[in-house]
Image 1 (cartoon, rainbow, N blue to C red):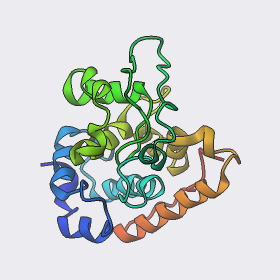
Image 2: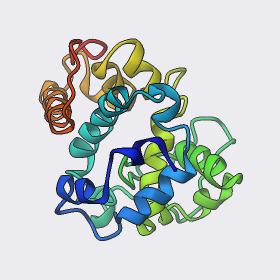
Image 3: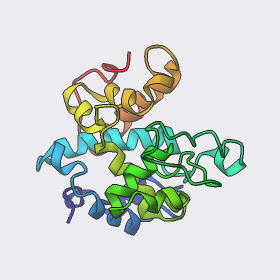
Image 4: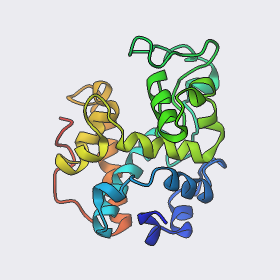
Length: 219
């Protein structure tokens, strides 16, 4: 089984996310871990303390992005106010958006844009078109809501991965990867402070600490 399942149990999952959306089940969480075996295990290794430190960072971002797994998609997507906002293919043709589909934030990480849907689809299915054609599956299927989040954590985003940045720089650098242009360097200090607070809370819950600055890499 996945490395974190040696210490992260269903009862802990339930206690951390009591108000979660029904799609975010324990079985979906385990299926997603199986689909992304390198998540945490490659970067943190077999050291459970390190695994807990890195998972605290993942959980902190979930709290900021989806309120401890309450949301499966961006509120503006549910309301229909951003259905064409995220449809640009920044790669000039590698990840073509499908007409009539919307690539707003979905899942535990709120992946958005055709590029991320296509790359996640390529990783999880070996076919970019599965999620490009059906991006709503990330909202509707809990295992994909989790698996896209785990994929994002270890995926290359403009030359950096959250996982590498976490270990090489610190928690703040993961915020830079995830939402740096909208939050870091004084753009939205409230959101940045929230993420840092949540990281501290989850470290405490998991019984570990991180002596490094939580802010380095973001401001």
